Image (cartoon, rainbow, N blue to C red; front, side, top):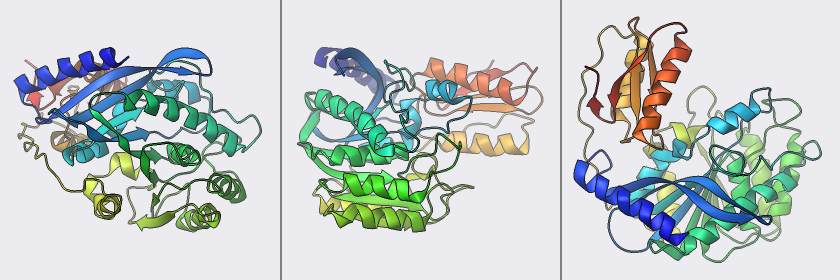
Length: 373
């Protein structure tokens, strides 16, 4: 396993040294992390971003949320990608961390089937402990890598992933020194898009907090439509009642629904709160790797106002594996950070065609380069 990952990262290091892209100074690589879970050998779809230099780095393990339980559920989880954490991964890698974003079983390209279904309605505790199993075995594999400092591990989770990281903290694993819980919660599989009664979530974190002793920082947007600040406060009170060390920070409103702040907002939205927490844990908090400024790109002619805005966001996005597709009617499709540039090209065209059915779409830009003829 170590050889497999080392070869992947060695290859990408050479490639980045040659092209000096937007992530110059960092190594980024997709990988399938070999693990053994519940007696089965499988791989977890993962993505690494870390400093492009020798040494061992504090490790940040990141994991994702879960879409609502409607008819498209299994199609949606198969489309998930570990690169959705690109913005926080880049920001933390600039501060000297190795970041490892992990898709749990059944999500993205990860092996195994979806294992977090609720055997009883709103039985969140059992589901989150299953999710924690995936993180624990992935962490054990990553701790053996030569670029990881196994004694300084930070866990970062979003939504159901936030609760999953608290379920890992319940076990107080060796090497884990802190938790970042962004908008932790669990949506109902009975009424898609809704939380079950708040007492279910409060009871879940109450149970997890009885033994957890890893310091945790909880961050929720003021306008989170799934888990309000009041519910977050109730959950925190329950979690800390048993002695678990944690505090809550309510962040300003983000977007229309607030819930996807960690994957959708600029890093400086939450870094001013997170950096002091990192310093308290004696972890790096200052930028040590400056990245090149994104080069300007000529905007495609005739874009709709929405696509003009999307293109401006595309240009500012720090990823060498992004793509932007257009059609001849002003429509567009954006693929943000992807596992590979080829995947980004395919995703951008598919997104463009989905937005403008029946139109012919083609790739306009990949990374920070215009590629159309």
